[in-house]
Length: 509
Image (cartoon, rainbow, N blue to C red; front, side, top):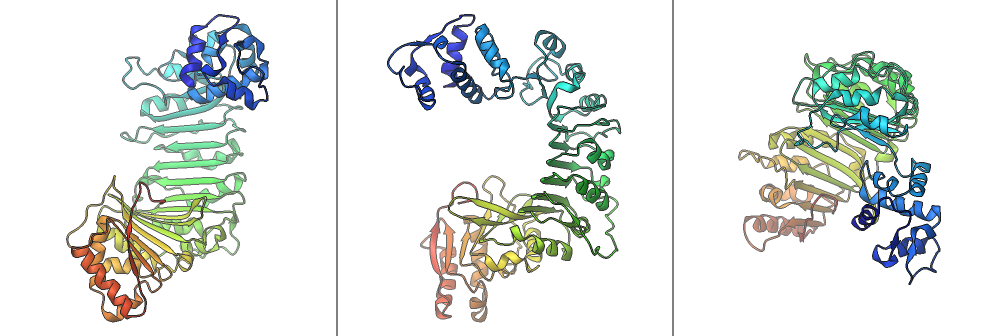
């Protein structure tokens, strides 16, 4: 559809009338949906179509092209088309795209005062055109027209040039993304950054930058809905109470991500104060993700109540001990993420992931996700086993447990791993009926089953009814080990059936 419409437009620039066979590019289907069926077998002209039908065609075309400049060819065809396009700027995304490589001043002189989008997502890195900050600075001079800013993986000096002039109000700004190049040091956003106001700003993402004026955010963008601060330098841990004071003032905030790049140096000193009798309520927050040391998370969740929370994710840096009573209480208070019927353990090259989800016929919603950063598989298993013995409320409702490696980021298996580590990991999952093991995991898990004593066979995963193995073999060491386990369960009056698991891409099958 995209190519055909564009071909018609390009071949007929400047014409007042374009004749087109209805069946040639599916206009019939679109017109039929609008209730007009009297032009099925005849040639028509666009002049014969009312403005609202043309607008539907334009909307479909812009949707298909998915490009900032999709509307440009339309306004060059004729005066009528130009009038229709400019009369519906938001629907047709009529906006001027500015970047480091586009001559912004010349473009702003040619076009009428349209909304501005500043982005570098479509810039060709192989283009000989230099990255000139003046192109973006020229667009920022029209701050009242800037609707979206997306500058990702920007070199530090270019980003500093941009944020240095982002003073004063941005009354139309709705989305702001600033990510500096992670290969260099994290630039510091000056106090003058967004020192005016951005009342319509709903989404703010800052990556690999330092933002000392974080506390002032509610005064600048009080209507934020989504806030993400990621890859924050380890030495810039924001005091938990400063975070809570900010979040409480952002009453419309629905999602908040706070991600540090490294453990703090010097080490983070947890609060010694008892939890407050009354916690701060975050009334609109539904999604909350944190990456940092576990003691830091403890100090944050001890201060807040999030009644609508249905998506909670935490990434811990590798550490010897995980003692998080406040985090466990916080999870237990979150009614919307307590019930799960499935858990998935994913072993990757540098992390291990535990996801609790509620799977139905139509949706698979992940409510709780716990990630531990570690490159050593034995550390991954022992760390996650510590967390699983927290007596998470999710464990009592689980029916299925998957343990998988990632085909695209496989872990480096240690030869000296102890078999008991696998058993310690699954021991808390006492309600699980179905256990799924990927091929590589089964090769390491099966010997642990073989070592179970007669007394422990029935105690390990006591509700288990079905064991699914990827690429199940009818012979070999895995078949022998699992066969012995199945036979022992049969004798203990806790039968388990063995099945082949055809694992698809991803972990939601």
